[in-house]
Length: 486
Image 1: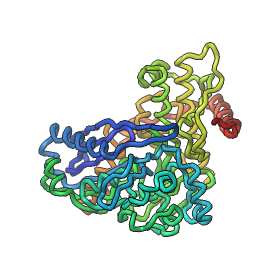
Image 2: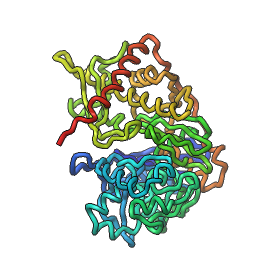
Image 3: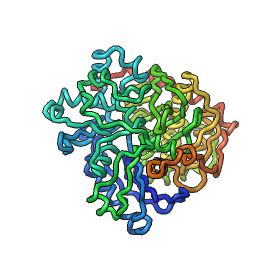
Image 4: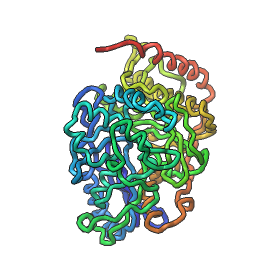
């Protein structure tokens, strides 16, 4: 048996699989995000650990014999979070998350301190990355900065609690802005640019490597007498790619989760920093990937649901199944700033063309359209870098709305495949990595593609109207970005 644990922003999820990769059981435990100031986003690392324990307890209650037989565990996690511990592994402050926008000035500090950073790394430092967060801590919380023994990513803090060892994988480490991505090792140059040292970094592994075993005390508490090995794992998107078999050159998927991602696997390092395309290591050996990221995908719909005090599924169901064209209103989904392709941590969302006739249906439709437009903006950035995408597989909570998928396919102009019943997300990919780490199997024979349950085609009758609306969408950010708010 093999367990995958995915440490997301909104929940910790566990997937238990057998030797044939059949899902035996799943469980999840919710998480909360703290926003103590505008633009800030934090979580208490202890909450992740407690949630992981709850997930394992639920799985154990449902399938005690299966949990007792677990031989390998893989980890998937939200990227970029700055989890700071002292020399004894004690957490120094709440984790600063991937969608925290406070460190935008510190990105400029890094580039001024090391002018070679962008050319070397293939990526522009963004406020969401880990390195600028540490520069911010050094400026504003110097006493905490002086005590930092290790700077860990969220899932790697959990690895420490599980195994007592400090480790990270190449895909997650790529998002710190401290990694030499071509050579898959820490970069002393990039570390120095943010005032950090190599000894403050965890050891590096490939996602399928064995990084240690559960400690005796954790194994006992979790009911796992075999003390399973813990795989390197991956950042959430790389882990999802392992879950859907997107590990070969040109394989791609679109993830419609809290954030939104278009992910393409590459057999070589392929940067396009000008359009804020992330060029990172994959969770599989000698493989890289391109990734364009929007910060508020389903988060935009959940925001509207909170404002209207109506559950998001109910809002989307009210629109019906048919797609006639775009909404009359136009939304800019930059609720937490935006990553690709604008790289602006200070910009915020906007709703245009509101009238007395605007109702909750129009607002909901506008949000669905806007997220699709943001994905299209990212697709164009990938294409500008030479990537060719003819179809995409869709994963994430947003895939539950077929109308949204119809809008996506129409706006992107490519077919969107939906995998057959069964989990193919980050937790499943992590479980696959746990299997490989425990058995030493060839990952290519394990990370296979799922069967396709359904393909959503672009709706030709609506494409022209959506193309016009998309062109209007692309005019909004340039028009408002210079408007300053105190």
